[in-house]
Every structure is written in structure tokens, then in C-alpha cells.
Amino acid sequence: ELKKETLGFQTEAKQLLHLMIHSLYSNKEIFLRELISNASDAIDKLRFAALADESLLEGQADYAVQVDVDKEARTITITDNGIGMTREEVIENLGTIAKSGTAAFLNNLTGDQKKDSQLIGQFGVGFYSGFIVAERVEVHTRKAGEAADTGVLWESHGESEFSIEERPRESRGTSVTLYLKSDCAEFADDWRVRSVIKKYSDHISVPVKMLKPATPATDADADDKEAEQPEAEPQYEAVNEATALWTRPRSEITDEEYKAFYQHVSHDFEEPLIWSHNKVEGKQEYTSLLYIPKRAPFDLWNRDMARGLKLYVQRTFIMDEAEQFLPLYLRFVKGVVDSNDLPLNVSREILQKDSSVDAMRSALTKRVLDMLAKLAKKGGDDYATFWKEFGQVLKEGPAEDFGNKEKIAGLLRFATTHTDKPDQDQSLQDYVARMQEGQDKIYYVVAENFNTARKSPHLEVFRKKGIEVLLLSDRVDDWLMNQLQEFDGKPLQDVARGALDLEDDSEQAKAEKEKLKQDSEALVERLAKVLDDKVAEVRPSLRLTESPACLVVGEHDMGAQMRRILEAAGQ
Ligand code: ADP
Ligand code: MG
Image (cartoon, rainbow, N blue to C red; front, side, top):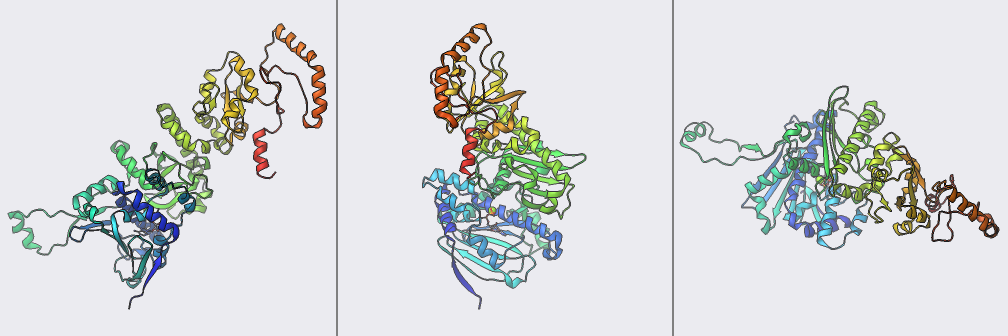
């Protein structure tokens, strides 16, 4: 007798399932993209594993995904001859969600369908999307290299539990069968399914095959072929293009194809903001296809968020999340890199030491920075979208990547007294272009929030003289300015730090200053006595026009914001 057991979904998985079914209904066809994407991943994994152990192929290396529909039974089945799963893997992969930050993600849900569906999009919809269209899902699988009787059948109605039992399977790999809901019968229709595959899976590098439509038999056919082959095998044909997208010439790839491929590699629901596709030849040979997403992933600030590129070597998939090809401050970039030089048995350890990887990393970093510069130059809202989502991450750049400091600085955006608005939309180039005759520094003020920055007493003299000041209030800003030091040869100057050299040198100004000094001598003395060890010095100044006094940080002392960060860290 075959052992059958019923198990409950992990709580998070149950929540996600429920959510998926209820908020993605208006976009239901994406389930097919997800299931084909999993099938293609499974084939990639087998291809990679077979590099080390050819016996896993069981003598069959004709990789393909097959999609079968049955109108009468109202089913659609996606079959792959990839790596397959053991019983334990089925329970783990289809019954739980292992992704880090899942609980935080679920807490962020609002109950507002539209917002939630976008969040799920960022989270990645995956296997459970089958339940958007199916009332029951069956997964029949057998791990490559294992005996036929290790096959298992997983089944669920997408509520709180699933069952799993032994079910022998001759061929390695996985079949996913969806028993469609009555209002989703369209996905058992051959032509409808073909068009969805074309739309989402054209770029998948393995063929996605469907049964050849029966052609009405002509007299000639009846005479020759059918007489010769009375019991012809059912004929399958590839529905998709089936060449790895990045290997095709740029001129032949449409924007739609680039976008669909992005959704495949990123698991993102949204379209990308921009991409860059390049083939490098010469000392090193590789192809890269890099994308900037439109929206930050929910776990952008999570230390172990999935990041890095999909690595291929000579078109063979090697690994996901190869982190060595881009610096941390560009961790939001998605895409693939396909090297002709790296060995097929390359590992993460080798990548860390390989000097050719360093060269690729610096070239890819430049590509991304150039792509961002292009996006900024293009005008429109796209760069503002990018900045809103990823600006804080980019600010880590100057510290991590000193060599590209100037390039990164050009991509930064700030709020300034020029607009007096909280939107960070002014570049340092904009500032420099507006600098006054004789002004040789870029001034900034740092405060806890925008309003405090805008109302800082330190700005009074600048406003009076019409000199622009950057209004900084992000946590990293003080630190960022310390890293940058200057832009375009102009030093960055904190207006709350040290003496300002704004005063003019005219005789009149000098006299005014001298008089101020004499007039306030007694007051300064008294204040210095009262404040005693709390301040280093009390001095009269022309920097204020309305406020009676302000605190100034010494030229070489730590900034107030930096001090707060260290205090918060317990130092
Ligand atoms: P993701 O693809 O982002 O990992 P999914 O929800 O799509 O998430 O799939 C969950 C896991 O189930 C996959 O990571 C994989 O381990 C496993 N899986 C799904 N479909 C297949 C398949 N056709 N063959 C082998 N494993 C699969
Ligand atoms: Mg998937």
C-alpha cells in the first residue's frame, strides 16, 4: 500500500496562498509564467548538476518544457525534465516559505487589494500563483538520478493543507497539473495558452512545447503519410523562441522581450525602469544584461536580501545571486552575466579570488553608473522614481567605491534652499551652475528632518546673501559629506562648522565687525563664564540676522548627526 499523509501548510504559506488568490485575480495569466519559469529553473539546475555527475541525465539530455491542455477535463499540465524533487524537498519547497523577511512582508499588507497585489509582486508570486486559476493542484515529481519508485504525488486545494503520497514515475522531473476553476476554462484552450506563452516565455532558453494542432488531412496526406505511418506519435512543437535572450543581437530584441525577461530573472511584477545589454570581446569575453527595477524590494535593508546577478558560463546556468559582480551599493541591480572565460566548475569561493572577476566587476559597475546617468539625462519622472526608491542605497557608494566617487556624486540628488521643498531633486551640478560670483564652496546644513534643516539659524546669513545651501536630513548625509569632501573641485562646507568666510573684506565691513566685537565684549565674557566647560569658545559673529545665538561645531569636531548615530549605537 502506498503511504499517504496529510500535512498543514506553514502559517506564512497559508497567508500567502490566501492573499494570492484574492488579490491577483485580475492578472491571473501570470501563473503560467511562474510555472514555466520554475520548470526552466529546474532544467538549469539539472544541467548544472550534470556537469559534475553525468549519470543524472539518465541518458536523456533533450531538455524541454511541455504544456498540455485538456478542454474536456478542464486541466493544464506543465511538465519538465529538470532536476525534480525528493519527498522531503516537495514538503519543504511547496509547503513552506523559506524567504527571509516573510513575516515582515506579511505585516506590511494593508488589506487594500491594489496595494497588496503590488507588494506580492515585489515579494515574488511563484508556485502558489497556480491557485489563482485552479481549485486543485497536483504535482508529480521524481528526482533526477533516483529510482522510479521514489516518485511522489503532492496535491492540494490551496486551503490549509496538502497531501503527499508515493507515486512511481519513470521519467525524471516534474509535472504540475492544474484543475481549473470553472471561470478559468480559457487556460485549457490551446490558442489562449499559446499566446500567453509567447507573451511571457519567449526568452526562456529551453523549448516550451505544445501539441501540434491537427491539420485537416488532405487527399494527398491520406495517400502518402497516413498510409505509411498509421500510428504516428503525437507531434510537439516549440511555441517560444527558445534561445537565451542575451545571446541574441540587440537590434533583434524588442522592448517587450526585454521586459518579459526582466520579470523572469527578477521575479518582479513591475516593468524595469531601464536596462543595458552589452557584449564584451577582447581580453575578456562576456555578455551582460543589467536592469534597474522600478521599485525597491521589500527587503532592501535586510542584510541577507537576495542580491547579485544570475551567472552563466558559456550559456550554462551556474548560480543565482552571484554577488561578486557588483558592489553592495548597487545591490538593487538585477540581470545576468554570461562569461566565456570562467571555468564551468566555478564556485563562489573561486569567484571571490579570481582577478578576472574583479575586472568584470569594475566594468559592470561603470555600466550601471552610466545607465543611471543616462536615465537622469533622459528627463521625465524615471530618475525621480529611481532616486525615491534607491537613492539612500546609492549614498553608500562614495565610501565603498572611492574610485567612482565623482561619478556617484553626479548621481546624487538633494533638497536645497533653491527650491525650499523637501523633494530631493537637485544635483550638485545644478548647484554649481547657480553658484555666485566668487563663491568657492558648496554649503550644506544637516538636521534631523527637513523642516529643522530649512529653519536652521545657520542659514540666516546665507538667505540674506542669496547663497544656496543643501538641506540634508537623511541619516547617512553627514557621513556621506565626509566621504565626498568635494565636488567638481569645490569643497563641501557644513554651515554649522567652524568659521565662515562669507564676510566681505570692505573697510566698512571690517569696521562693523570691530564695533561688534567691542560692543559685545562684556556679554561674551559673561556667557563664556556661565557656559564654562560646556563650550569651547564664545564669539561674536555676523552670521545671524534674526536669531540671537547659535551653536557651531568646531572645524575638526564630529558633526551633530554623526554623534547621534554613534550615541544610538552605544558609543
Ligand atoms: P522560487 O521559484 O522563487 O524559488 P516558487 O514559489 O516559484 O519560488 O517555487 C518554490 C520552490 O519549489 C522552488 O525554489 C523550487 O525549489 C521548487 N520547485 C517549484 N517548481 C519546481 C519544478 N518544476 N521542479 C523542481 N523544483 C520546483
Ligand atoms: Mg518560481
